[in-house]
Length: 280
Ligand code: AMP
Image 1 (spheres, protein in one colour):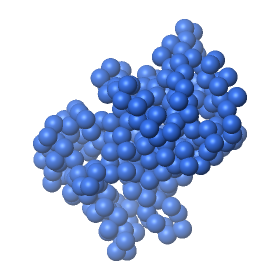
Image 2: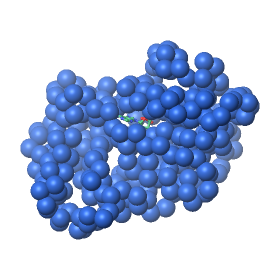
Image 3: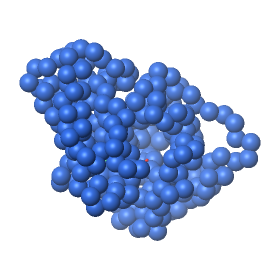
């Protein structure tokens, strides 16, 4: 496994690498969710590359950039065990050198939900992913359904800008009690950790109502709110949304011919958890 810190060296390494090359972008603090992506990438490609970069431009000024969990040594060990060929670990000023001033601005797909709650978040995500794509030129790139709107933003950018990468979406990996694995779960107190599976329970309740024939999106959402509002350690529900899974546009009536996503963001104290389920 080769660990690379500069863009120039990563570009050169990828240009020489045997193809196809699969890329797994991450912010580190790796868990089984990330490893499900690297395992698929390992199986699909001759060269498997991962990146570990806590991208400052996707964090708002009052968000957790400084305290985001970092565990580089352990991450590298895990990636080596999973058969990674190349790991890109650039320092921030390598990705954003002095004077950096060009951005990818996603459109309507990034307006609602996480885009509304975290202004500028998807501009940072799209810009860094575009840079990672141009540095590594992967045939395939792997993302988790856990961040459903992020996948939609990246797919749209990839399509609109003809980046030509095959985007592979992998299912959300969960704890046995349903909580989606996330690096941010490490922030939860034991009491909050116990309450956190309510997020997935709420989504399942909404899905269940839909399965039983409810087609009014407001009533589907209500089923999720009912569970979340009952949980005293849930301090705020930023949103429960029923959206078209491609465009992220909210729907009022759940139609059978659209792939839909029910997504939520919930705050337990200072910890913000997001999760979603796809209907169909
Ligand atoms: P992050 O390090 O949080 O930026 O995540 C890197 C990639 O791993 C993203 O594509 C995430 O969607 C994906 N990911 C994070 N958590 C999970 C999970 N529980 N299941 C599947 N993929 C995940």
